[in-house]
Image 1 (tube, rainbow, N blue to C red):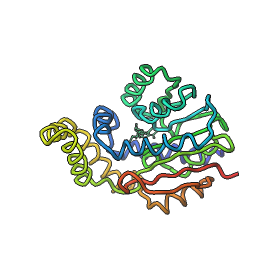
Image 2: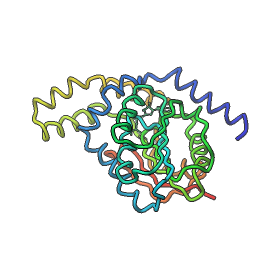
Image 3: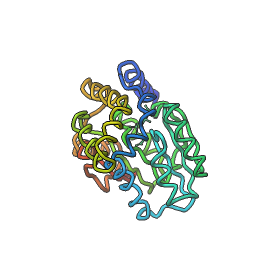
Length: 255
Ligand SMILES: C[S@@+](CC[C@H](N)C(=O)[O-])C[C@H]1O[C@@H](n2cnc3c(N)ncnc32)[C@H](O)[C@@H]1O
């Protein structure tokens, strides 16, 4: 990759750090509590897990999770591929702290790299699978990051990617979660859960502003497919998910 391209990756990171209102540490403190209440999040995990057996991954596969957060996707893969080697990359110490605890409890072979994707230097042609769930929208410039992912993958390997493409609608999500918590645990519990996790809503409001200000990237499903193709991927599957707020794709590097 030329130095000019490297430089624009750093410009993307600097711009995001300077302008973004998102506080990932505040998000981390409530992340797992809210995800546990969120059926759409659990569906995203199932979308990955149900595809794993079709991909003929070796038992000792090398798997990279980019923006791995509190480690929920690695833990889910670990149930099916317990002997795989996992590399977890995420910029946030609080997210990583929570993930580290889970990996240790499950005795999974996971290395954690705490860094921005824009700054990560990883070995080329090394991974059998890259997972990247709800991270790319926050990692500009997206096309250059995708080109790096392509280089990190082995020739016939897979990229499983889910990405927020549409503006976060706080009221819609709040009502959705309240309804599900009320159905599962009762109305009193749902109000208590809302109160306890108000910081999560606050961070989603910050994300909403970042989307509106163009710091986080929005896309239609079709635009997402185009972005993946123009960044060097063959798109094998493309669909909407996460209540139509996100796009899901399964890709292989174009030769
Ligand atoms: C919405 S969470 C998704 C976490 C995880 N993939 C999941 O689905 O549970 C987004 C994650 O991306 C991380 N993140 C945001 N910008 C990043 C960047 N530039 N480089 C690395 N990680 C980043 C955040 O720290 C956070 O853990």
